[in-house]
Length: 479
Image (cartoon, rainbow, N blue to C red):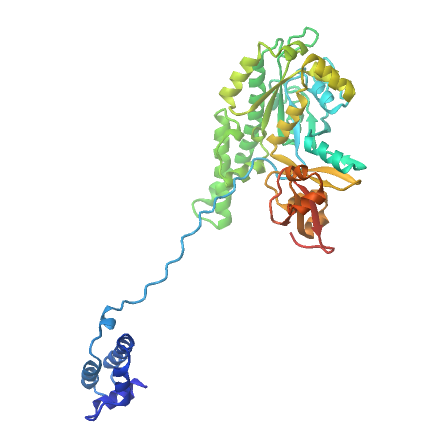
């Protein structure tokens, strides 16, 4: 009923209207709610009286008819609904280095430390390995099969006509000498070759041989390590200082204000200065603690000391077989003091060259006889891991078993792009088998019977050792 009409009826000296009787007959709780609602309406009319109802009459009638209910007195204005707390999203840490799956690792060191001998043995190629400095000028690149027992089992299981393992690309880079950053020897060209790779095998000589001259006169691993790291840092400093010199005047002109684009440029400039100061203090970039924004800037500079390093110590065959060398404790101490956490792997170039000349059966018998193992599988896997790489498999009965390399924590679409861009662009879903479960089941049919064939979406993460089947549409789909 309209509030004005109700007031008119209440103001008349006659029996209360049917509406008031109906209100009185309602349950207590409902009556209290109605009383509260009508009281608010009447008070509103009291504040804004009409010509038909005097203000004093409206107020007196409202008070007499409804009183002041407990529900109305106690009712508080509705509070705003609180938003749920934000989830703590952990930002994924970016990686130093260029993104991609086709990554390379370079063999770096002084001249005549055994780089080309190592490269020839590990790739079974024929790069010149002569007894004079700079016998290698242009970098040699070769692919090395990544040893994996899972691949061997899949080959035996599927009996394919084609078998392709995962590979690690290795580059043989000519030796650096003291002063290479200023152009000594063939330094500038060689440093550019290092810039083209994504990781470093740092070769250190730890054997005496009068027939193999040392460019510094005598074998001294401490000095050799310092030379290489100093030259790499010096080259990084030169690149960073060039960037700062080219951009300093423009940054100064921007002052304290500017657009969002100006702020972005100033932030990037400040990050480069921070990295420059870190390197100038004698530190490698890869050992610093950087934010994701700083890592993005570092990656754009292609710095040499940002690359992961694995130290390879070239021993004589005798020292390698007896597992003893006078230089190893010195090298280990230097690495622990300057670059803690980096891997150190001893090997013998002469011994590995001898093994490379044998066929598989002869090599296995020889190693069994002398109770020794090749260091190459460990070296390859360590280098592969240092680049943050892993591999998955595709397998077809009687057709092909193949290992595909990708970055760790890659999505299914990124993994599919290794196979073919069209498959990645039109990817719908992926059938996934876990290697351990497949091996335990014994066959695909038994695995499926156990309900262990998994269906994954294109945004799911692929895991190391997965055996996958990519299902894609015929047309081109967006990523």
